[in-house]
Image (tube, rainbow, N blue to C red):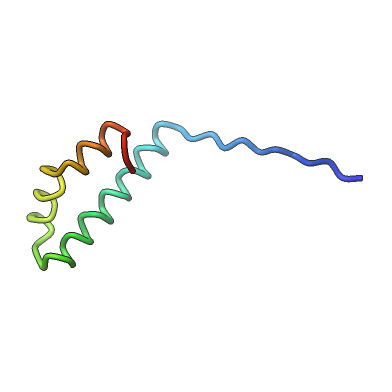
Length: 61
């Protein structure tokens, strides 16, 4: 008879920050490709967007 073990994943604030940064970088790179703009322009587009506000507030990911 085997025992079932439950594993709990602990996500630190540092991990959350790293995951959020990775998501943001991917979004910015996709804006570059989609609109054929520079990284700086894509960054400006992202950080002035509603999506940016929602991600920073934890409403969306």
